[in-house]
Image 1 (cartoon, helix red, strand yellow):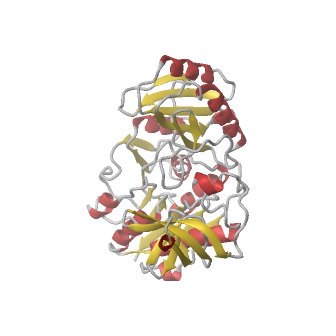
Image 2 (cartoon, rainbow, N blue to C red; image 1 turned 90 degrees about the vertical axis):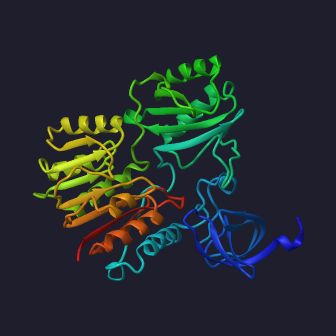
Image 3 (tube, rainbow, N blue to C red; image 1 turned 45 degrees about the vertical axis):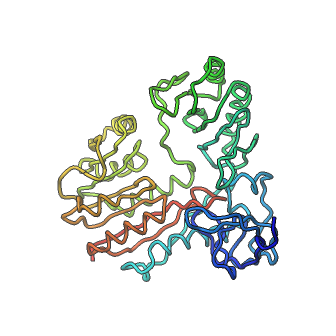
Length: 405
């Protein structure tokens, strides 16, 4: 590599994807593996989506927050870019994302964000997405489609880690082409395995899936193709993959959302309710005045079953959350997917105005855009909370409450 492609710079911040935003005499470059305040040397590798990128060669002046990652795969896997930082630095980086999302909006400067940490930094994940290419099974490299052979992942919950061992043992010899494998831990520490292949599966893959499903730790296996059609299934008949990845943090998240919504005696609308992560708790506090909306019929069935088991009269409907049922609502709770809820707020489907809006977000970029739309309607922020749902990663789950004027 030519020497003129080797640069030095100082890290200004961490971007939302976990890369270090590094200042150089040639401008800003995104460099994985560095921390704020560090001076680094790196090899410039090109650009992607308009951003210059580099590959870290060495850290010239390390941050006092830098730690040795406990995982041997950390540098090449890409799944845990903040594993090089201590707990306090990870918190500060992620709260910085939330502050940036709310900066300049009404109420933000008067509201100090709070933080909910995870009791476990390792062994916490209840779901994970792997990939395969030919006989190689593991995680993809950072900013690459290349699959790394990963036999052990230390952030997985023990039951999920055992299931991954079983998947590799049963499927490695028969998988061909490429595809993705999603694992999710369900009830009784049993795991659901969902495979999506880019090519037509061979009879050997069907046989391997059937054998895998007989493992005591496996609740069920599904095998589908990227070009659609109903998947083949073994074991559990109904495979719904919608739960949160970190149980301990999710318990606090659910209580916090319900407390901030404060729905008792108020007409409440919940959008993107999924399988009912928040719905059950909200319904217990507003049993006859809750309407919940979710696009996926399977998730709605699961949510309704959970409510029926508690004799709740809350109403759950299949529909587009950007076009909610007409009516006046005092409180709105929403947990949209990564793309946010721009259409909902632009088209004014929620008005006349609810008293408060509780917005749960998994992406601070779309959160910022949507908060600007909401505050433009006369709302102000009065709570901002970050939840460390995914320690070691740059992912942030956050909750923002907005109240009228």
